Length: 175
Image 1 (cartoon, rainbow, N blue to C red):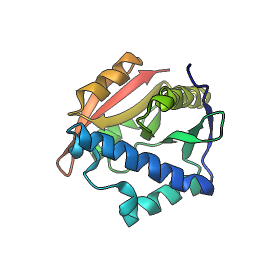
Image 2 (image 1 turned 90 degrees about the horizontal axis):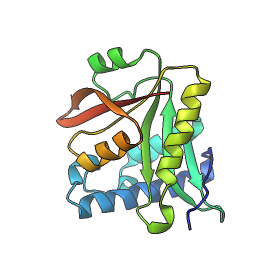
Image 3 (image 1 turned 45 degrees about the vertical axis):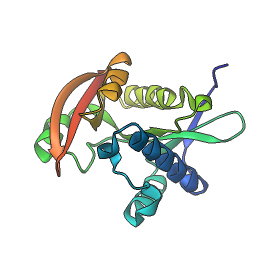
């Protein structure tokens, strides 16, 4: 049975769920040999990440995917500008005519299947409502399966950058 996901803006009470989703995703990445993607430590143990989650929520940038029981399984952070960590040259090229997904993370459980995709489809709707041409996101360039996942959703790689040794691939979907 496939879950139907309700996508809604995150509220302050969702901060713990967002941190838990991030921690679970990090454990999964580490267990699958991809600790370089987000690092080996749980994001909730980093005060700067906890503060960032609060900021995402208060700035209205975070949305959550909720199941029929009201449980959060995934979250996304979106906005109208390139993410602040993106290489300035790449960001300058990327700023025109796009809406951005800064982060998307999902619990890596069978019952969470489809939550991340639902968030991406929600972001497509936001991009269309913003009357832009592209939905853009970036991901760790060395995660081939994640890049393939986005390509299966219709995204194409349009740029690359390196942030403090972390290789990023910028992908876009014409909306």
